Amino acid sequence: MTMPVLKPAAMAAMAAVAMMAALAGCNADPSAGSVAAETLAPRPWLETLAVDGEIKAAASTALNVPGSGWSSRVLVDMVADGSSVQKGQVVARFDAPQSRMELSQAELELLRKTLAEQASASSAAVERDKLAGDRAKVEDDLGLSRRYANVDLSIFARNTILDALADVGFLSTKRGYLEWKDGQSQARTAAQDAVLHSQRDSVVQTARQKRDSLAALELVAPHDGVFLLAAKWDGTKPEIGASQSAGQEFGSLPDLDQLVAHFSVAEGEAFGLRTGLPVRVRLAGTGTELTLTVTRVGSSASTTSQESPVKYSDFDAAIDTATARKLDLKPGQALRGTVQLVASKAALTVPNLAVVRDGAGHAVYTEEHGRQVRHKVELGQRGPVRSELKSGIAAGARIVLLPPAATEKS
Image (cartoon, rainbow, N blue to C red; front, top):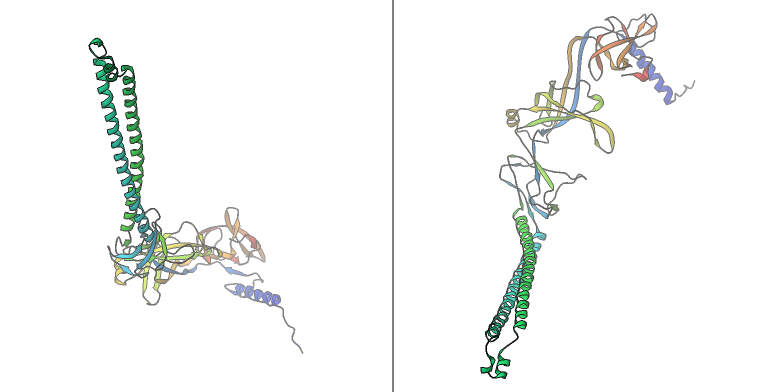
């Protein structure tokens, strides 16, 4: 006789029925019906959360490419990523070929501006001397004209007087014109000097900036720590020969005196996570275990990549300085942590899948004489699997594990 072949959907249904039957058998009364339920009674309640993490520094100093003004840099040397460095140690060296070229151009332009200023000053001096000579001659002629303006001309030969004397009015006008011309020359020279000085100052400032840029080609560690390169938006890190910009983030220097065990956990698994909980930490690759305490829990969850919509919460457990130095702990070391969320010798708890929403509160169903009765309850501490029952149902009640309002599960 050929056995019928079961389809996958039928096999899944049979597996679900078998699981419900097994659940119904747990702490259930043999005389009860087919409803999956468990008897509410005080029992030990222990829940833990296993998470992966790494050692991080609670405080870290940002290291930027030396220089200012986003000037171009070329990385020529650096210590290895993850190396221990001491205060004052050079962690990276750069070159600035563009700044060297621009400094040469600025120095050449500065020489040109200096020569232009000297030429302008010489030209102004020549013009001033010429005008001074013209004015002196006019003054002499005017003085002579005024001397003979009121004398008895009969004692002189007429032609001699006409040759020697110039019209007083003409000479006075000419003197005024020369004074005006001198004023215009001074104003023009002052304006030209102001332009040349402004251009020269601009070139001097440019040259000074380039010299400062060339003087800032070394990145020095401000304190002891572990040098860590900063990754760009695409995940790549700086390499020898790569171009950098002054002020750009280059790396960081974590403070080794303030280390923490840092963990990330999916938002749905963070039930009951709070500060003060004990954490058992195992350092990867060494077998060393530490007992720590949760010191910080992130206030919000966020995604870690664009490829996954899953949100994660993070939390830290501080490591004291003496332990960190004794074990020579470094940022980036992988570790495995186990958080003890709940540890109670006797507690009334119900499975989370048995809890449904009841307005702003919660409710559970009990099995009573073959009927399912809804009860409003007050929950206490929540855990990833079970939740504490503070009031609403007494011990001995049979809790329905698969309540009818399945869409309202909490």
